[in-house]
Length: 126
Image 1 (tube, rainbow, N blue to C red):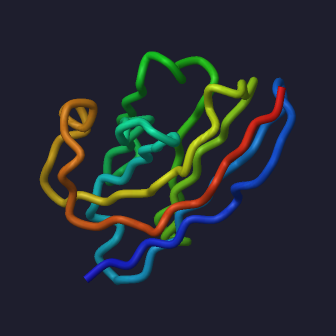
Image 2 (image 1 turned 45 degrees about the vertical axis):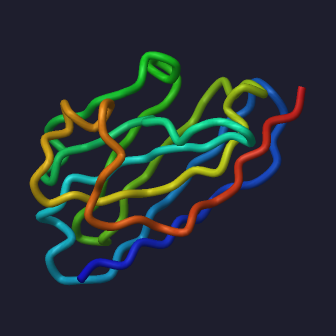
Image 3 (image 1 turned 180 degrees about the horizontal axis):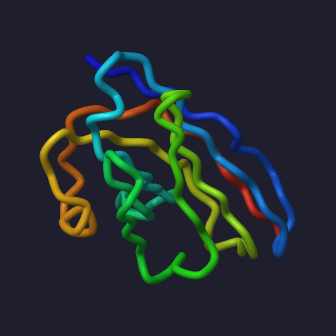
């Protein structure tokens, strides 16, 4: 069993940065690929980024590539999403997800994962 808790969201002006954290409970968290999705009002949940269990591989949505960076610290059971150059289009609830078996190369086409957090709101003002 893995429980995920997101933090770090808030209100920020366009062009600024935020770092989201996803803290996990469970001794086996380091075995899970972990990633971020987001859902804006009136829109479907979309993939943002994912990282393999070891941290050696990452995947990003085209819309955030070169602006967002995903990383993890397995000793702290935490995954991070550094978000730079934020725009109002990045406004959404951001969710953390963990998956034991799905390769991160498939995360962009699937939102079916083993565990989800409750989400953290990110609002970017213009």
